[in-house]
Amino acid sequence: MKRLIGAHPAQLALMLACLALAAYAGSFLLGDPSVLTILIWFVGAAVAHDFVLYPLYTLIDRGLRRVPWRPRVPVVNHVRVPLLGAGLTFLLFLPGIIRQGEATHLAATSLTQQPYLGRWLLLVLAMFVVSGLVYAIRLLGTTRR
Image 1 (tube, rainbow, N blue to C red):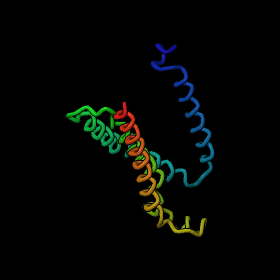
Image 2 (cartoon, rainbow, N blue to C red):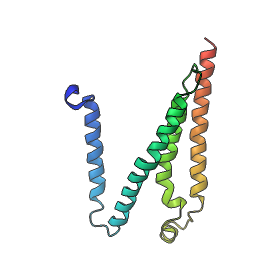
Image 3 (cartoon, one colour):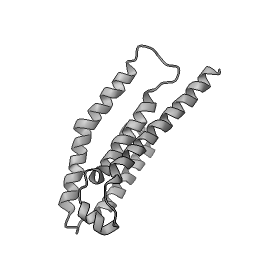
Image 4 (cartoon, helix red, strand yellow):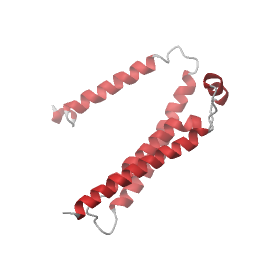
C-alpha cells in the first residue's frame, strides 16, 4: 500500500479525514451571502502562503542549515516551529490586526479590535521564548554528558 500512495496508509487516512472536515465546514457557507468574501480571503491566504511565506521559510531554513559549524543540538527546528506558528497565527489574526469589519466586531462583542496586534505579538514572543527554553534545556543536557 505504501508503494501505491507513496506514504504510510495512516497519512492517507488523516488527509482524507481533514478533507472531509473541510468539506463539512464549507457546507455551512453555501447559503451565506458573504461566501465570496470568504473565498477571496481563502485564495489570498493560499497565494500569500505559496508565493511569499513558503519561499521565506525556505530561505531561512537553508540559511540555518548552512552554518559553518555543527552545533551539538540542531537549532533548525527551534527556529522553524515558532516561525511556522507565527505565520499561521498571523493569517488567523490578520482580519483583526488590520481591523477589517471593525463595526461588525464592535456590534457583536462590544470590544474594539485594537488589542489584536499586541496579543499576536505576545503570542509570537511566547512561542519563541518557549522554543528558546527548550533549546537551552537540550543544550544543557548535552554538555552534562
